Image (cartoon, rainbow, N blue to C red; front, side, top):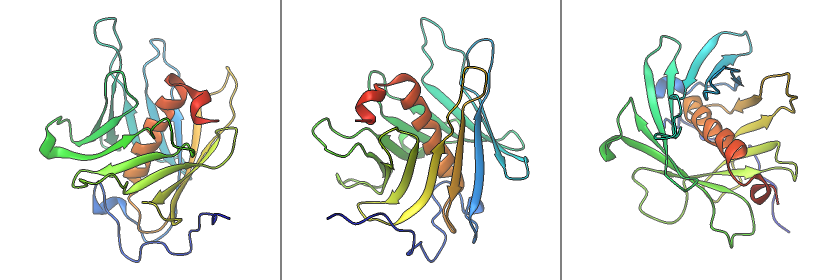
Length: 209
């Protein structure tokens, strides 16, 4: 019988993927809300439990020539923290520092599991990882595809929880995110944004099977 993921062994020191300033010694609860816009842009607002804006996510206007495949994470002051870029024709996302797309500024890549993998987990590989073993994984928690855990590598150590709120056509899409102590919450927000794109544009049935 496989073990259930556990959060009992959180990293003892700050695990900074984006920046140490996003690692806090306590849990961080965030709400990621997709904005309703006339042009259908992929824009999000990230707030804390006191409704303070922590990040915003902006997607460029999609056109027939240049389909939407990028998202920019900005801090509360409007500074660009990272650039998320989706591979053409594949559910692979790469995160770069600032507005760069240079390989030297690559932070991580989020990949879809191979089709023969039994568990529908998404692997996250840091830029210095040259192996086929992921540094983090996004693990589906239920068959309805509404709850996920972010775990360290192939272990059962949970570092964040992501819950997709059920919504109607008249309400905004929301993700409730709980980031565990010493974990980079900007990193978890970036992963959640790529997950939202997957759910909205990819084969949802495959991930929820």
